[in-house]
Image 1 (cartoon, rainbow, N blue to C red):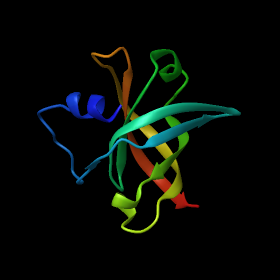
Image 2: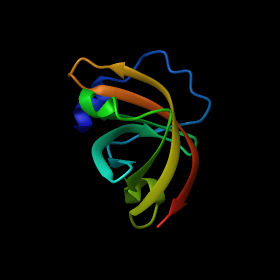
Image 3: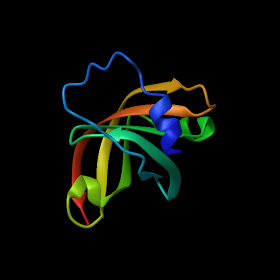
Length: 110
């Protein structure tokens, strides 16, 4: 999944905050359902992740998710954060996945 994430990054990057290109497990939480996904990159203000097209239809404007941050990002031990996000855009990728760009509204570490 990591090599896939690198190959799908757009050339015209217009982000306001520096994102870390990292493939980390992400879980979207919708009511009592958990949907597995994988990040392409993330920052303190946003995340881009991949998931199955059928699952992407379940994500509305605002949603919750958890992401496992590796020690390379935390500069300590790995940790899990729970976030509330807002969908900025969804797009189909070349590998039959849906890419989701989301703004991180708030988060807590646990």
